[in-house]
Image 1: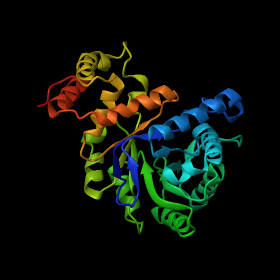
Image 2 (image 1 turned 120 degrees about the vertical axis):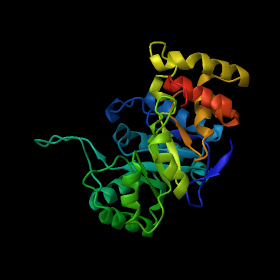
Image 3 (image 1 turned 135 degrees about the vertical axis):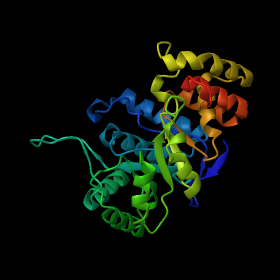
Image 4 (image 1 turned 60 degrees about the vertical axis):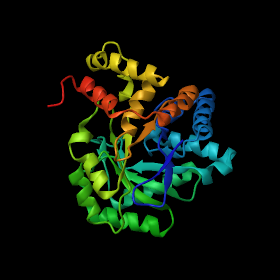
Length: 305
């Protein structure tokens, strides 16, 4: 696959990244059977062998189970670590058994430090390449976050930092407190989730040289759903373009994201090794401007003004 620089950093990654959220096949660590463990290993290895170099995690994926499964693969294939980049996230806390507990976000100094150390242990690595705040904490104290980031960087536990699901204004507030540039903002972008093209998110990425990571690039299964009204409009256009390029419809949807000048990096989240491999073909599709806008118009259901 082609590669690109990630943000304003010295990191280089393939244009498609691999998302590990689904590799455990469950959100409950107690339900990770031997079959699920082996399939998780197969998924990570398939992505590695297909050329993906950025692997996306979060501490909440299967409550740490996905990081642990990837750690098992790294223990089996030690050479993999020097050839890939590992990104993971913190900041979401599930409710516990305490009376009145609720799901919440937590960007406190102690939670960031504790979460990072837990991810390092589960992955079995010494340094995380990109550490991200998962979802905006309304109670965020940016100076407190900055202290945590500086400590983790100083101790060699994190190389670069980023955010996920941040609006431009939220990113600006945090960035103002940090001595180093945030390198990624991971947001939902797809043919059926187009707001980042128009709400300033991708404009900010272009202006500040922040790499947008796209989660849900295939719209969480809506693309291809015969009952989805947006897909009914899109299907004939996607089918025609797919035939012209000799690829599947999913590859066209990902290539649509790759066309944008902000250098969106779609996160492929399949737990099917064959599909992980086949989606690499999206990297070799160059849509014309006519095709790109034809897809946009079909997706939104009205012509450009």
